[in-house]
Image (cartoon, rainbow, N blue to C red; front, side, top):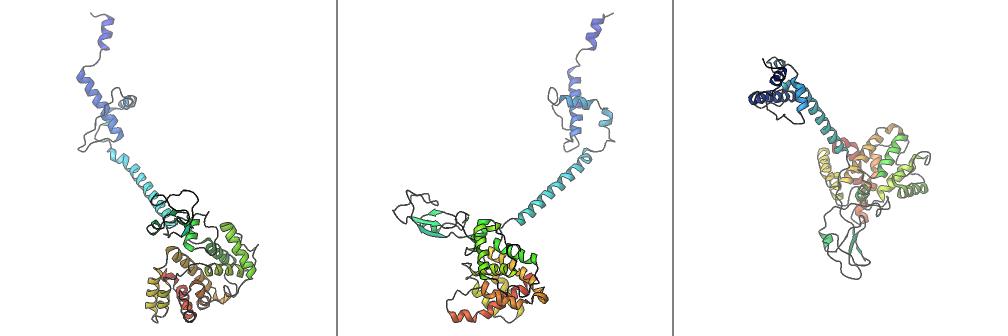
Length: 367
């Protein structure tokens, strides 16, 4: 009869190689089933678990009754992961939707040509386009007055329209090119337009003769200086300027002092031709095509202004300002004839009025 030591050795001996391999496969099967790692045909993907970092997890999983885990009554692993997949998909869809909304609210990328002027550089200087040296003692090249780009005169003809105005160079608001201003401040529209319109609508649109009655010119100039000095921090509230006509006067002055009118010189003839069309439907179609000729920043500012003036006409009973009256006020303000002939400009006044009146009345259709 074997002694106790021999019996202990017999019971504690290691299993045979075939039995150990079978047990390892069963451990890998259980762990793979827990993770849902199944191959195509229903076969379980075997994982090398012996001696790995996952061994403690597998050992814990093997304590579960194998007949329960591997029985046919156990629901498929796909049913376990389906709610998690649905939740992840919904979260991803939500993120994409929010990103799309944020992108639509972003400031559009307006193209702008460089405002090159002949410049004399002190000391050696290199062209920022071709990276070659600029020769000469005076007037070696040109410099963009808005972004500070320094290039050769010849290189300036091939530089793309990618001017990014810098606030260090754009030091004023009034009499500044509209596209330059919005790109420098990274906004959709000039802050003067937004702030003045918001202030006017906050105080109410029932003021009689709104935009027709002029405010004191000294105070209007004071508002202009405040915008040039402080920009978006300019205070135009009722506590500083009680008369609303001062704010309307400052807004009209901004449009009058634009170096390129809101309705640009290039698009001006097309708008005048549209106003001369007697048929209403054809006139609207022609105006819609004319709007496409405007630079994006000009078109967006015009749309915002026309929507505001449309709200002004909705209070016509109180302010006595119809679309025709507003057309008389804003026609010469928003449009200027590129022709220097005084008689031609005088004859265009009635068509300017008609253009603005039509834009206000059909604002919801044209924009």
